[in-house]
Length: 403
Image (cartoon, rainbow, N blue to C red; front, side, top):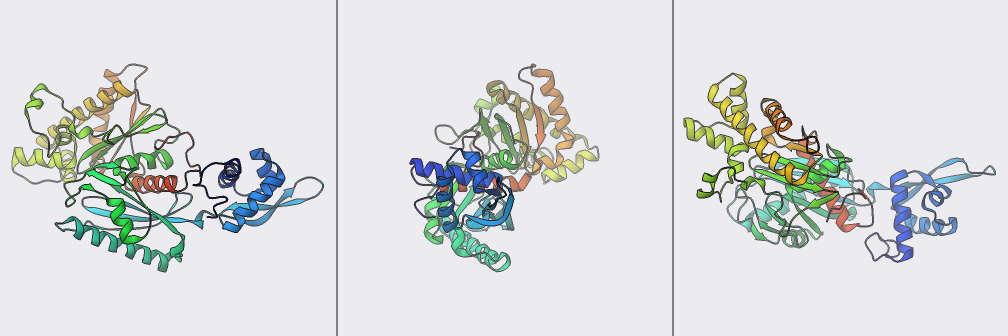
């Protein structure tokens, strides 16, 4: 964008007015110049100057005419151009990687999925990862007819503790090679020649839920991810909570019993051992010697098998205790569950809700819901976070503090 109107430059009055005009057009498109002036309270002359600059930048365009605007005149309609800039959003998981293409409305235009690479070193992984991103970009150019020049940013949602300000993975997933203290944003940007934004995957998913899912119009909520591992992300009074070292929400390491203090939970947290997919599989393996996935355990519960049923009830009770602890501290409006284990949610969610209703009071009562977005929530979230970073003056969720 031209520096006169770029949304990410310091806010002089002129630039503030330009940002206001752009956001009004984005929110209410299409509008005439007279309607923009009325919505913003900015004079028609100033609006016309700003619109002219924005038209030069092609972030808006003219199309159609409005109804009569007094004295028989019609105004040319101004439209927001969401495809003016595009980005690549990625959900990097231990078993699969999902790539997406998004526009300035944080809409997902294309998606692609492939297995996570089976390599032993960080550099080998990064080389393959960069190659996959380049291949996805080439596919978008060919299949979606986009121009590479429109790509402005790459957003990556990754497991672990992420320093999003400095683009660092501080403590990563054991399913990814050497995934600790890695300047991932810098490494990818060097290979791909685009700015790279990082965020923890569950936190990105929470932003996605606030943007398009179960947490819209909510100011305080928790998203609990029950996949291979167990984690959460928190929204408190309209602010995404990260904590001192970006480790807020690492609930997998919660303890529930005095005896738990004497055990080593570094490789798999206590809470995670009872309520994650890998934890369920480990429990079955320890008790029966059989290898079963979380889905297979759910299927066994549906058949009425007693031990899997007991383990599922155990999951429900520990999850209830964890939610109770979070809610009594934070007084949440809503708790949302996501992740592969929730495919069996009908087997444990009624028990959880009954337990919560019995132990919470009128002013702390909360309903636990399942995500509708599921796997695409991190893609929506990382798209919005990336756009918020490179275009901070474009408003997406003005009532939510993302950083």
